[in-house]
Length: 152
Image (cartoon, rainbow, N blue to C red; front, top):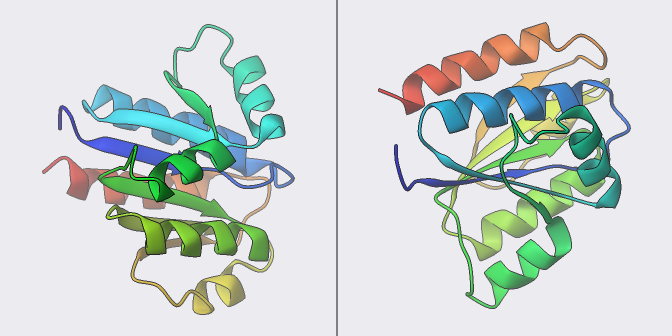
């Protein structure tokens, strides 16, 4: 998996499970040899930095808007993108990423309206859906299955 560039694209951090799942997924991908970058707004980046003060789980953190600009301008791209979404805004970012990037898309859809949001996705992606807000276990288990496929 060395050299495969993965973007974890995080939305607004108002749903509690997002930060823990992002830390978990980043760690699993890094351990498997992927080159992982986590992109988000200032609040997301601050939450990750406080939660992972020594950078053990997340090695690279960047501003989401700047990253999208770099992809649009062809200065950067990724092989895979895990788009976190729990609302329409997250869906908009993921839709944009699917249009501007060659990355294989994975939509991580969570929160109270996860099923309806997942049904509204109109771009090509693998959907990882859990109607959870606080307990990350079901989403973690679904991501473990995706990880098993990626490292084969």
